[in-house]
Image 1 (cartoon, helix red, strand yellow):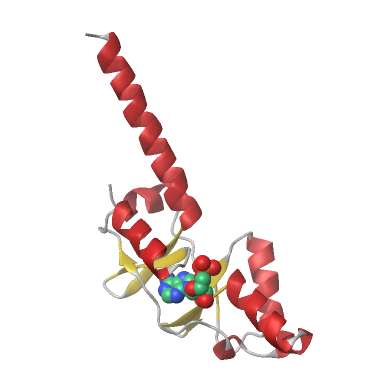
Image 2 (image 1 turned 180 degrees about the horizontal axis):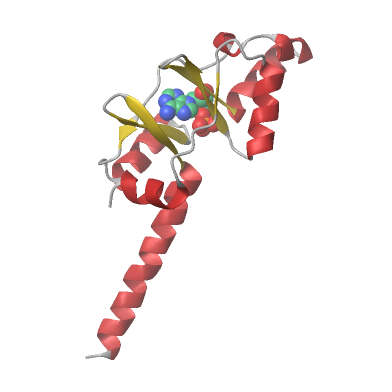
Length: 142
Ligand code: AMP
């Protein structure tokens, strides 16, 4: 199954800020939207991503003074992305290998959504339950 199946269910909304946005705005945006990472977009370019882990890291390293510093100073710039036609299993593998929980989805270089580890796990549980149900029906009909 592909990433499209997840996007079809959860939608294509991408919460973003610009790289000039201060850390306190990043925190407010994560909280208000109940998400774990925000994309940083300047114009049409994806400049990076800031996740909860980045926020914890910079505050623990530099203290509350960092709250006024711009996202450009603590975002991850080298992003791993996926395509709509990539398999859910391959995205899971990317997340596991790269140790991150969010992957932006691109189609022809345009951002069309974000997949989180929560989306992947939810999808895998539903898939496993469906397979078990099919197996039960198969055995019962035999
Ligand atoms: P996360 O597990 O998503 O909270 O992110 C852990 C670390 O990986 C943070 O430093 C993020 O900025 C970074 N990160 C998150 N998503 C990606 C991604 N798709 N590609 C590269 N780095 C990422």
